[in-house]
Length: 395
Image (cartoon, rainbow, N blue to C red; front, side, top):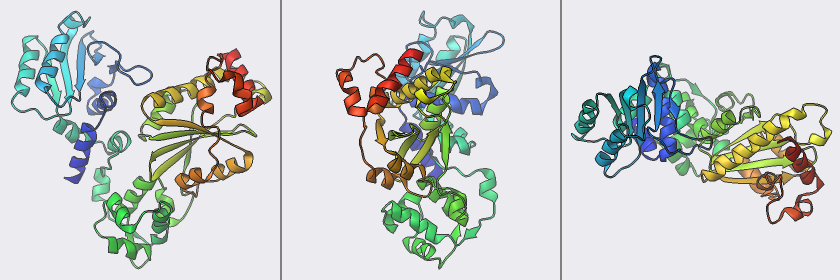
């Protein structure tokens, strides 16, 4: 029941744009007939004007029209209006629609019959995914729930697996203390039943069940293998491909980021992206290139793709309300960041210098239209002007 409640709350809390993205992905998992969904979201994840919200064109040229709404009040009027728009001149394939799929974040009462009747009058099949239906379908896809809704749902194999127990309490205590969390607050966050039980685990007076280890991993981002065995790195680092900005954005987006930091080494121009998912979970991504274009030998044709990646990440998340900032470090400080696989990034970033906060915003101003553009070199250094020259010549 707790999982269902979490999923219900997760769906109900989604913004309209995020709800549409999440539903499109869930429908693809639900049935092959939705594999080819075309959404009205633009490259920045914003809804473009148009009816329907999304559609599928079948091989026979017929269409499934999809409408999404997160509206909580006057839902009947909203859904009936959405259906009727499909029969208006706002929709250019009205005569080819054979099915209408509606996703909503409420559970309508008997008024749901009105939606079916309205579609039937227009000669269309109707499939309605209410909030409860979305929750039920989601529970069959644990990985989807984790990635898109940040809700842990055990898979069938996990449900039937034999619980294992490990003496790993000192590492769990390390994760808790580096976040400055009390034991009472920690059990709240991992939904553990007993503070005393946790303290016994931390003292290695009691073994820790694998199910609790999974919850600690989800909360902190620490690797399960490290928690269980003390092997490998505490935190993994992944790369962001410059040749596919949409993949980079999706990789970042599934973490529901609250803050992004573009961290640049101003000695060798390597770079990391630090993602703050919440106070207790931070993730580090590396870019598999350096920005010292003046020292490159060949491969300059990749510069436009690199510029587009940086620009896309900045603009997509800055416009979504995520706090996007830069950080510039000398080699000594950057090394601390580079060797942080065993350190909590939240603490480390707080200790490091905070200069260069706006460099990732200003670097996009390759035509020097910002009022401060005449001071770029004095603010950042000659490297900044040189980097902009390469971007300007290549884009």
